[in-house]
Image (cartoon, rainbow over all chains, first blue to last red):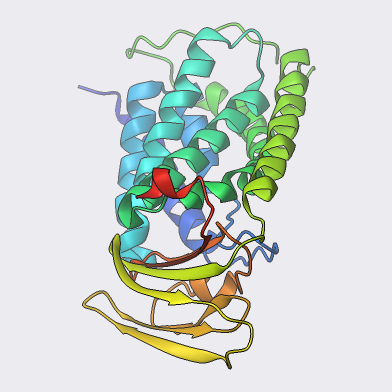
Length: 181
Length: 127
């Protein structure tokens, strides 16, 4: 049986992620040459959950967020892209956070996550239309993901620091790893 | 409080480096020195192949499938999505493609258009 307070914080994180993902679709990002570039605000929630609660819960939060936000935005084809991106980026962020938490701060972890998000989405898109030329957008997306990843990481640092103090630590075997900040 | 570590800086620098290398690579495979063909694909299958000729007046191609309806404008030097009934309208915003190996895609309608020249090494990967 899971600690009820932890469960409440997890469901709050899911709710915040859903809201961010829906609001994000109304923010236009007019960058020439790369249509569909997004801020990736919902990634903040994934990263914070990963740091505060652990890998397993980050996967659950990411999956739930994608499914419910799809109901909100109404883009069913978007589900495959957001789901694949969320799962793969969470996995990469977990790897970096697990083994390189001494070297990279959350900004580095988040930049890795944004990169993984792009690669997963382009892979799914190229498989769906059988057109591998879509990878020609990757360099442009990498530059944009650098900026969005940086600010997502910066936000997550402050959020995670405060949330770590509030959320009860008990019971789930997540050890606080040493890190620079 | 150190926020950006040394490794973060190297990560950012290396990503910028690889992105610029990638842009040069993309630029090197999108060049025009041969006759251009426009290939329209629906759900991964070739729907239509049009030879582009600068003397031809612009024409439109209508695509009606179970996924949706799109209209593609084919000019003498390139092609673009004129309109599409998809939700996000990203294909329309992508604009005109004018160089070999460039591509524009409407994901909800599963329509992709791309330009190829006769001499192209990417084709062997795509098909």
